[in-house]
Image (cartoon, rainbow over all chains, first blue to last red; front, side, top):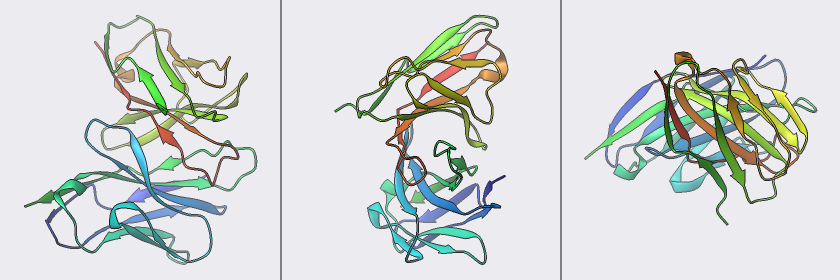
Length: 116
Length: 114
């Protein structure tokens, strides 16, 4: 079985400050890793994903994430946030199991609030 | 190209009523999914489909039914609504094969059962 834990439910930060949203996962099989963002009253959209290769992954809107296999973590970072980054962020994994339909297992979400 | 569309946007049901949440995608994706989102709980998979005529249960299927008669449509049926089904429901789709591909989400349906 797989599980995803996002270590912070809420992260308040001032505009132009750096931010890190933490994600740990547990899985008995290899997984793909994803970060999704949900702006208020909207559906989710993909920020970035890690499939293989370089452990540092760059996504949209200046976000990046680093995969750490030994610590089973996939933390999301941005060096300087904007008011428009205020949203809920979800970490998710997809287990590499044949014929499982590409299911995603989500963390609980982290609410990022950027203040002026 | 509308992507994934869901109707209705909002709905209030009484206990015991039934309804169908509609989901349509125009990207010719084989894989489709229904999730529910509860505060502080992330998204939980209800049902998914890997193609027309093929559906399977997710993590929280009790109280729901689905069908997939076409590639485009994947409706979710609530037969006897209960307060525990108050949630925001998201439909998503992806191009096969599944794991490496991005899931595209609809805007959601906010359902309240009173």
